[in-house]
Length: 313
Ligand SMILES: NCCC[C@H](NC(=O)CCC(=O)O)C(=O)O
Ligand SMILES: NC(=O)OP(=O)(O)O
Image 1 (cartoon, rainbow, N blue to C red):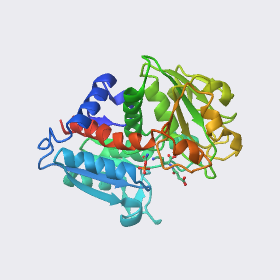
Image 2: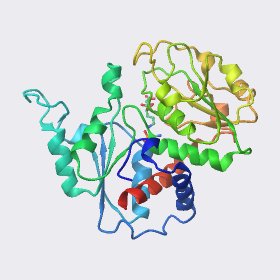
Image 3: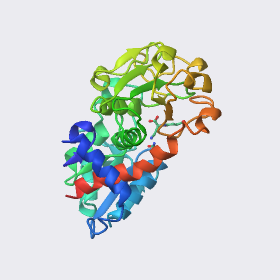
């Protein structure tokens, strides 16, 4: 693989999934694969899981790691072409990407959307410019529109817990006090379209995800109907797509509760974390055996390891 930004960069999703499952069984089997190579991790936004799990994955492969909170510790980066740099941005992404390519053999980038201008956000400028100007493979640590390392970990978790060949997977919007990116929802939907699952997406009006990600999913505004018979309930908030980047619905009847889970087929609860308790999901669901959130977080290590293995090659 030359880069890892979406499911479309993966030639064989089943093979990558199996590789991630194998990494979980024998994490140290390839401990010299990355010897004398360096992984750079660049964060424009906060992270707990992505940062720690990707570092852990890299250590399993013998990679050296340089991690940087570029938003706090680096120079402000200009991404526009041909601009007169007379403002507060001291370094152009062209030089930044070129320089980092001198120090690193693989580069991971996390960059969230501005949530002001949909067209601009959906061009995924920061990630795409790093790909354009870096001379090493780039992987997304969650970009403006996708979170592919999370989605691969989610696919692994479903694979490990499914009781039927084709489980019913429900992606449900849930309330949140702040406007959040659409990346996790977009990416999960896109990956589930490549998996052998029956995908249903439910959200309030004005929150419909773009059809380029939802693909063949059934889409409904009726959450209770969607949850009926679900094997997996994947909850996530995202900001409005119609009134782009805004919070236009705070209806707490969308919160995943014990009563909502009772509609499912003894369904498992999933969330990428961090999660707002008793906004997105109630304590009794998150603290119950139905919750897979820690397993998802654990699988982040092995999804990252499988991806890094391919990028090293
Ligand atoms: N990487 C996983 C989720 C990251 C981000 N969540 C957040 O920003 C939550 C912030 C808060 O709850 O204040 C998102 O939704 O894309
Ligand atoms: N799920 C996830 O990506 O978590 P972080 O934002 O903490 O990395």
